[in-house]
Image (cartoon, rainbow, N blue to C red; front, side, top):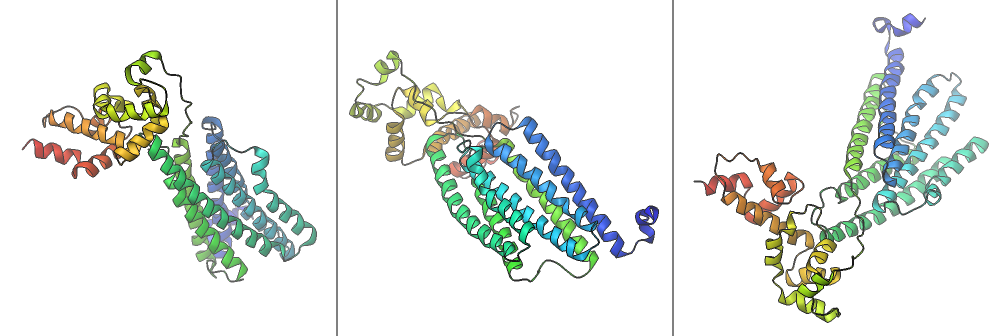
Length: 382
């Protein structure tokens, strides 16, 4: 019997489908567990990393439902167990909600507060297990749709607000900004919307009649799951959290050299009389890849708020644009002294100019000068 089941040559499509389905589900499940263990062992500094690790773990258990349902011969029992497993999938949805909240507001909420996202789904499973009421599933769908809509609107607003704050306070936002999370939030919402509409309309648009076609769809779903999980995994390993820096006490030498008094009017008056641009060039503060508004204010011996107002009002720029202009200017100056036989690469040039990544350097250079650094070097050496 076992030999016949494992002998691919003698199998028909009805036998081959469950075997390959379990194989693709098993591979996906193992990769999800491995990713979860990797995060919990090596990258668990922030709440959103731990939240996604547990979400992956719950998702991996969800893929095990293919093994469970295929072992049940009684049709009514299989339908009952299948509905419980579908309701379990919504616990994974709750895990994604927790992940989004902790990503936008890292390390802000307690575990008890975050567990509120899962309580409705746990109650739904208990309710259906006791009553087998057909109302439970559509109620869960409607609740999830409403909660997802609120989360999408709130999340997109919060992400845009956070990214704007970064531009006004940080000189390098490469691994701080959450633009990728905003795109991911929309994609997750669209998938949830299709799932809800399909379920409530009692029409399956994605299930096709033949076992071979079902196998293709289910295998594709496993592949998509692996791809998006690996994408999120890579992003949250790289993701950094901006820590609000307390304003340090300034030394007497800083105050004597730049600030004649400590009044608010005095701070702003000094900022308008000092040639801050030349001071930044002379001291090369822009070479600090982790430069923030607070750090620069401390270097200048002034107040963060008034330095921000000065940059926004007088320079008509964000802090990010202001500092990167100095970095690009420094890169251009270095290029002017290079020849075609220079041993340094463009990546070296980016690092020497204060950029943390070549992609940011390239984008800022093209924005300011209209050509790439390589093209500029070729044209200047003609």
